[in-house]
Length: 264
Image: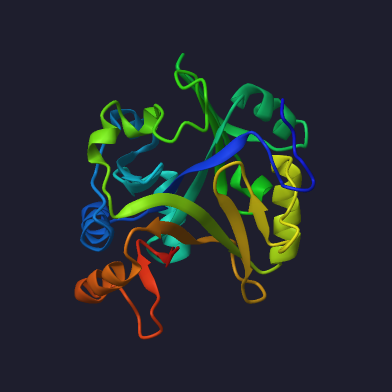
């Protein structure tokens, strides 16, 4: 495998999907449509196994997912209750070899909470506590031999996701995780993902495509998926739409589904 290059943080993974948890899926999807022009490509019937319904929306070469609990015992429902409402829920990375990544990560003492192997698709969901408080998955799309192919197959988004692409959003550029001890968590993730922090900023983990960023929170604050960064075609137009939709604050921060949306 092409392991980490300490100078570039190179590795065989990319940021592919970020999930938000909400009890108002349709409203969140509508807000993402109003602001970013995003369209629902797929509602995965298999996710009912987790007591959820979902919507997956292409965001450039990546995806946003919204999950909503439909059963009282759904873990996402308990997560929403602990967070006091909508919140960032999960980070999904696409790897060149998910099996090898799983073996390496579990070798570091990380627990697997779900293991999926459907032939064309391989995924391991890792215990949030072992990733510092964030549910994380490393997945492989076997029907896409080049994991960096911009618009390659992606089973969680269904077979027709390319038809739901919008020109308004060009890419899923980064996800930001907030933690009371951000430097320690960034170092933990660097070890778990087998990569090196950016030489310019130790709170940034560059992947082969996309970044994982970390930011400091107040002492005692829970670890959160705090923000999603989208590369957009027209930042001014996105901000105009956000004002019209009522999802931008006085400080210019766009918030949808419990997370901050940064624009690149």
